[in-house]
Length: 298
Image 1 (tube, rainbow, N blue to C red):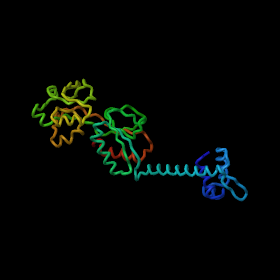
Image 2 (spheres, helix red, strand yellow; image 1 turned 135 degrees about the horizontal axis):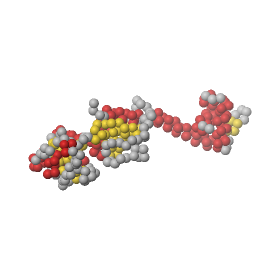
Image 3 (spheres, rainbow, N blue to C red; image 1 turned 90 degrees about the horizontal axis):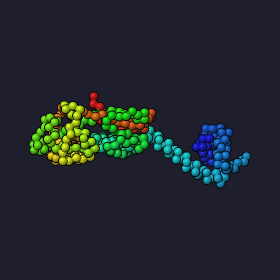
């Protein structure tokens, strides 16, 4: 039994006062109207209507059930309206949850999101920044930005973004005091600013010196790229961090780029989202927006 359909028929009977009028309003035959009412009564184990040859009236159970049926049908109507609105491609709306790595997310993804929200005022968004691999499905994320190689997945779609390029920099003050290294091997004589999430023995890798990393030391390390950037600006040492984090400082002359033609190889970056044959417009528009601004350069 289609219980919602039967409720709608019952409400129509109560509103119109007869099976014939309800049948016309519901585009059914009078026989089908009677069948829906009987099925409801059998399901409830109680009479909803008292009927005779000339009129009908609601029973006590029928009066109570009518009020609840109206509420339920109104809630269903509202739910349908919400679903229609969320799927309205002309006006994307709803809430998105996105996760991204800490440095890339703060420096590159957050500005794109604020632009997106200005263009689509009926969309809201949570951006969770963390240097861990969140489970999109289990943690109910709509999309994720990931750095590095991806495992195979039948449940996610991956779209490539611009590679994650690293750069080596130092402040002009530091270089005046300690000298400007021209070869990565000279870094062993300098104070280097290390990221705590990198394995301490991993070192910094450069193409000119082969696969073996340089194991470098310094007086300051942090698990936050922004803290390392600030330390470099204050002349505390030489920093290896994503280009997107240091680009404004380089352009303004606050940091000087080193080894421009001998940097660590870039890492792949992808936008991931769950596989869905019909993604809601809020997600479709977000994917398009990110790809337009951060997609691979032609």
